[in-house]
Image (cartoon, rainbow, N blue to C red; front, side):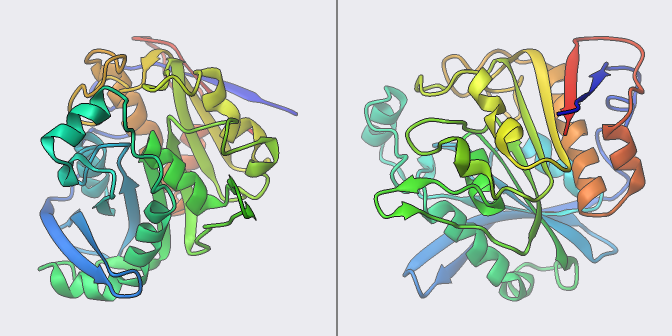
Amino acid sequence: MTLALVTFLLIGSNELDYAPKLGALATSSVPSVSLKDAKRDKTVDFRVTFPKSGGPYPLIVLCHGLGGSKDGLLPLSEPWASHGYVVIQPSFSDSFQYMSQEEKLDFLRAKNPKFGDWKSRPQDVSFLIDSLGAIETKVPGLKGKIDRTRIGVGGHSFGAHTSMLIGGVEPRTLQGRESLRDKRVLAVAVISGQGRGPQFDATSFEKLAVPMICISGTEDRDPFGRQTPERRQDPFLLAPKGDKYLVWIQGAHHGFGGINGRIAWPGSGGANETHVSIVRASTLAFWDAYLKGDPNGKQYLASNRLTKAAREVELTRR
């Protein structure tokens, strides 16, 4: 296996020498939209952020981690939208949004982490993709702005798990292998994903054939003690070769300096704007490369363009 190593360094006013933090497009955000999935008798709540003018634009479905909600990960979703993307952020069934105070306390004490409803998350994502016409009708100003041929899914932590399933990773279940792949999705971003363990073995990743960026770091430990930082590299190492990228950040914790907009968990690490910038810029370049077909994004991911370090990052591709 041939690996190319690139070092990213933070410089100047352009974020990691790729693009400004905010793009040129003014955006609109509708924080609370709901749709009923009649087949599952389930209502899916979500936020939509999109450019006010122009289009159509590629769609990114951005998935929160365990306990999060549609209102998290704004340090990623709002800049992406300003650079020409429609971003939909669902709240999944494990969100604090749907918990009582007692359930939240048990959750935070790790007595009852709600991993059991994992299958409903990719089902929610596919339902939203099925429902883009209805979403455009419900959200003022969104009509005609979604390019249905260019769709990506990204997520952090349990949201990365969701993204991997949508991208083709097959978990082991009591009934055998199960696929929740959505073939309309062209690329996935896996921020603090899951490797080998009770649900995945080395062969689970063999059908993750779409382009993927995998982001983790040396202090990225599972809040519940189930994954080591090294296992976070498994999706990259075990998936088929071709358009796969691993961004490995020295000193990065599970919260990546605040990509969720807050420091949420013990062990998530403190605020670190450099780490937030690294995640934001590398994912934007990835989406540009694989959803827009912009050669600048792909060249950036393959280059060593930065010259002044704030913290060293390795980007490996295969």
